[in-house]
Image (cartoon, rainbow, N blue to C red; front, top):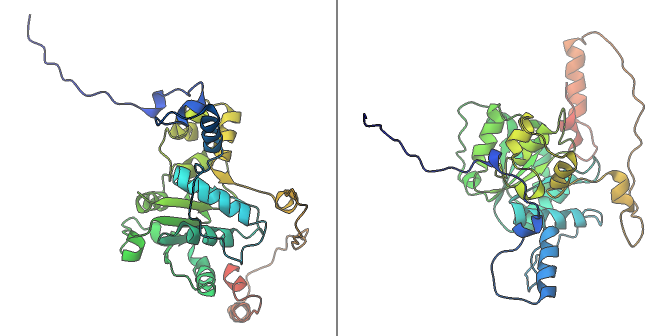
Length: 310
């Protein structure tokens, strides 16, 4: 018989072939010294809540400028960053996500950088200056360049990236997404957006993959984030929602106002206008110049003018 060439390749574990564990608690405990049953149960319970093990810990107190309803969000996000290497802050508009994100970045005690739209750079710089803080700033637009390379040493040394308007990175096929994915390798990621899901649940899966391995949520019933995002694998919707909830802080205004054992918190929000559509022609250049100049002179906190889009 003629000799047959045999080419052997080492086996590979593909997350697409993994199945959810029947008992998620099996992933929460690691080998260690024998402890009393109560201590093991307490460790497992804290792991389920993504909390650090009990013990003497040095914790930097939260800054006094955080509002009462923002402190629980900051606590939760800091625990998620320590447990998963990333987290998603998706509170409703008006709850102060920028302040919470900045407090978390400062509380981590590591060099951090901001990834923000160009239109919000001045707003974030003003916030940093207000609290005497420095951080490198990378714009979304710069990441969209096909040959983007992070050149700033302060950015390269960052151990945490705060990504504002993170929903703009929901498409992995864009230069922007790929640029951010390269930028955050080896660092923690805090995603900030009020709209993590735009068109389908795959948007959320793509965001989570910026800091999670594809099979990281297998124990929670989601064997492959990539396959779920592409619609190539069915997954229990309840399991997916539960897994996402483990990684997110997402509260409505009502939840932030009333979700307290000590009683409701006094929060006030501007009334939402009913709105109306007005169709008009193009304005003359002279009128546009006066409009832009007037917006630049608005005295309403010094940051709102940058949010106007013409």
